[in-house]
Image (tube, rainbow, N blue to C red; front, top):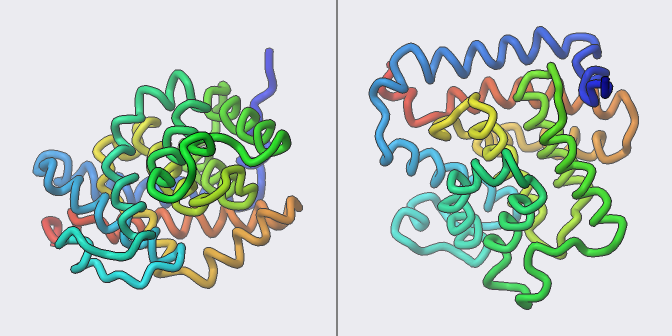
Length: 242
């Protein structure tokens, strides 16, 4: 039997309880009343808010109002374009995750890179990293889907396997995993907004993860659990629940 590749993460102190609490918070928003009252417009609002937050984290100065009107700077437009494709990639992530990750980059970077560089890793080491990450997505694991989403996000953001847009792709991939693994099938929570609200902690813990040490990975996971709880609070559904 193949060993569970995420088992060691779930064994880290405080991780199981932190992610259980985060999942409870998400479910409270999505299940109590939310899913019975949602519409495509609510999903669209969540995706737009997420695209705006992700773009700001990537250096955009555009406002959410500008994005609502179809405007914004190049980074913001790239993030919005990607947000419209994310949910369509759910089946692909489940069966061909490497293809899904490549597609995320191809969509995000379509306005700024030569076609032959879209969806392609920067070098051989990046290609290996992407293959390993794709294998992790399809591996048998008892770890919570939230843990997998956090790892996919941090790995893409820290490894920067593509020639551009790695942060935007990483945050879109996180949202994609949450949808594909049944945590948030209609993509109604807004993890990108949580990362923006917690920006100092977000960026610091990503640097810790990139260092590759167990304390750095541990700290990232505990941060991610906090961010997922905040992502539920950032959902457009919150107004309906108040």
